[in-house]
Image 1 (cartoon, helix red, strand yellow):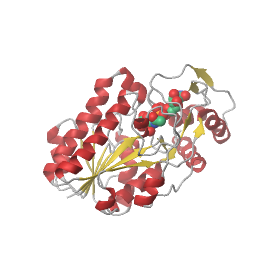
Image 2 (cartoon, protein in one colour):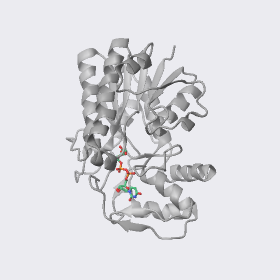
Image 3 (cartoon, rainbow, N blue to C red):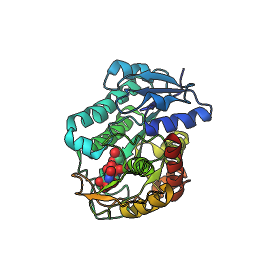
Image 4 (cartoon, rainbow, N blue to C red):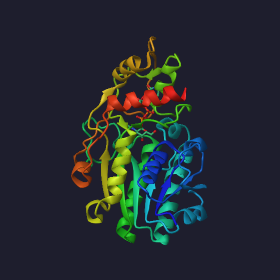
Length: 312
Ligand code: UD2
């Protein structure tokens, strides 16, 4: 019987968490509806029990939660622009899915759920860095859906005694992030295009900034959350990031060095629903979890470019 359940296990973040859990000798079950997750991401995870099923199906949630102690809930339909185009799908795959999972977890006696929140919850507030005490101000349907799930986490902690914790991820990147969709994260798209000698497009003037967070930091924060004493983390929301930010123009310049791409970037109008600047205050995760970013942006980008280069 699996002790850990990873949702979105065939996706970028889920498969990275599952891989580390297996390395540490945990028994792991993964679930993924393969809408954006990919079967090939399961390579190397053969020791994981895998369910190809959808969290919007309560019976699938019940099967997934049976016998489980801790859930790492990474499944979602990511992307701000996708949600602007199709808010109902975002809601179904984030909110409906999460509520089903929480109900199944409660009924199965799951002890702890660690939820993948999003920095988009903060919205375009001018205050930087963003800290957890700030009033959320979601702009896109994606941000609203991810935030709604945070509230469900807290509600289930208070009402049903589930140990829920929310990690608000800031622009995660690294190996296994899908570069091939119009909704892919910017660094995955840029790495792939620039390695192939194709021109990337910057939406806006490139002065927007992000606290890009390498995947290993996110995996580490999840494992720390799984191990933390319940009274420290239950019902809490914590930023998971690096506490530094970089503009897209600067990022493009570093990627030129790393990839050998010699052309310029194309510029296009800004995307609707985008926020301009994002930077995390990471003191709370440091205090409650002992979290410390273990891989900085440049090193993370170097490893990421290497990974895409090998794939290509
Ligand atoms: C949001 C969240 C992030 C995560 C993610 C999931 C914020 C600050 N971050 O990421 O934590 O939840 O959603 O999808 O809300 N861009 C280009 N060219 C491209 C692609 C993107 O210029 O080819 C720009 C885009 O307009 C934006 C920036 O790059 O200004 C980052 O875009 P993204 O889609 O990688 O991530 P973002 O910030 O929407």
